[in-house]
Length: 424
Image (cartoon, rainbow, N blue to C red):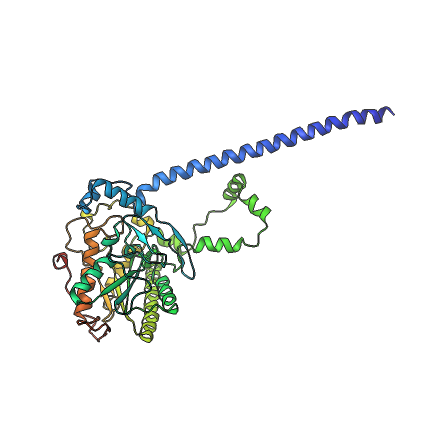
């Protein structure tokens, strides 16, 4: 009987101790998670602040360097332009993964149909009595950092309309981080939807080597989403706890093996990188062949432009973004351009291939509004060079008949392009 009374006395105390330990452990677990979350948050903010000067769109406000590129804009207008360019969002797009979301500001306007507005933007769908050009490419084609009327597409529309004397409407389907595979798919989507242009121009180069593995920009995130689709919600919630993230990160072995690690840390051009560069060009050429085949069947004149960029044939002494960490951001870009230039079959690639990579070789002033993106003068320069080549090779009509005529021309017939000839 005494033992029973003693047990009845001890049991409540044991329960109290158990509850107290459970509460303390739970509280400690919460405190540790909050502490680890705070650590990650501070580290994230510090990293973002540290990397701010290394992004392609580095400047956050007007300064002397940018004012030289925009002599017609006030400081307030330049600040507004920078803000407009930085606040552009991307949204999901079928097959190509993503696109710029509809956007309407003073300097940057993106149509709900997927193209950025050009000067005197044509209607959608395009009118049959216009000479319609679809312009594809990455962020340089989109024109990050310049107003709608200063993009390559806008200048090209103005120049061709004046030279041809017919209504030319250019639709700017340039999108950030797009490369030839995504552009091909986007072109096909437009054709399937019944939007057939008279001409399609594809301006590439930078993103071919920036995305050398051939995977679109959000592939990693989409793969993770699919892999976690069948994971129970309870496990997902647990995996998101900061403390468990820290434990998993600590226990995960470092992965420094593989082709990527060898290539990115290599000096010069090792054999492995040469294979990678050759693979990039093979992919580009295959995409081009598919586009040309589809274009012929739909009666579209297809034109391919190899774009200029600051690391090739440009005096970096005049580049206001020369301290950008290109080696980390795009480790194969410079050698990729050198590789393409060294192989004549790549550089001189048919009557509808326009090589503009070295067009800035004589430039003695800033041309870029960011690490990669063209300033107003450079956009006009590129557009003039494209227009001159189209006219010289008779790729578009030189009269009022809106019917493109593609004539055979030697691949070596390259028009002379320089800053002097581009200034009109």
